[in-house]
Image (cartoon, rainbow, N blue to C red; front, side, top):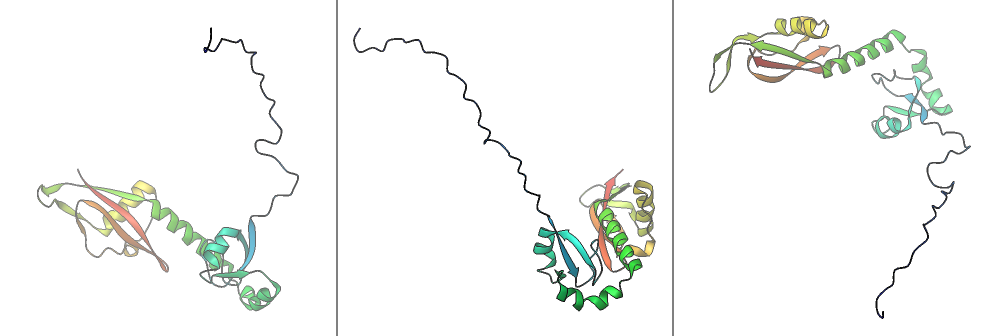
Length: 185
């Protein structure tokens, strides 16, 4: 037959041996340190206080601390420059800053759920009893075991509508938003 391909039997293809060069390799080089030593130029919550030399991640130092002038590299000159501040480090203040940072982080993740009966269904849903600071403090303790004083909540007026609201909580110098969700019963 002319012009037509004839069927040839092919030998099965042999699998190529994988070379050792493919895939992730482990090298004998030491792992580079991903931390950098810095001196803080001001108090930074959850990191340290002014004048303290600490180790932080390189990216955190280069992308956040250095541009905002919160820290400098830990060199002989900088250590001498901030030596007076290092001598005055108040470790109680440092511990208090760390506790505040933890409290801020925890409060920012919390949501307090309040259930209320509605007087008027449409168009605005008005609550039978408005949500006050006392109610929020009580529910915060019952739902999340977080104890706050009533005066720490900066609630301008009682909440009288359904929805999600952000109530500022005063912790020393910082205000932390607390999420309060009011639902119909």
